[in-house]
Length: 149
Image (cartoon, rainbow, N blue to C red; front, top):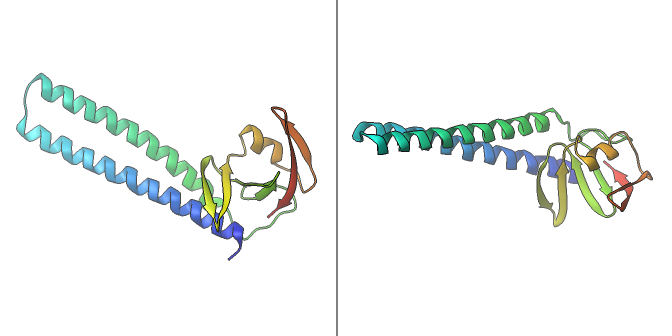
């Protein structure tokens, strides 16, 4: 398995774990609200239910975001190697590994840090469509594309 494939697999697992956590939290809140509805009455009860509902909406919103990230990752074929940078490329620039997919947390794969970024991000948009040897500058930092997988 290549470094790029390991990176892709790690990010897929990370996103799936997040989906599972959000779903579990939503189910727990739903159960709590059902249980709370059985034994309470009055203003405190209404406030508690309202707060649970607001929390559930927040969790549903976060779940939608993570599902969108999963959809982006699911479309990527980690075995594809392109000469120019596309969604799914693993790029080394200035000694930093960048995985163009979705904005996700930094991870370590085989002891090497990898940052996942969206193609729409400032850095991602500069990388898209370019190849090894391309240089550019963002916020006073010069970048050189060293490799593309």
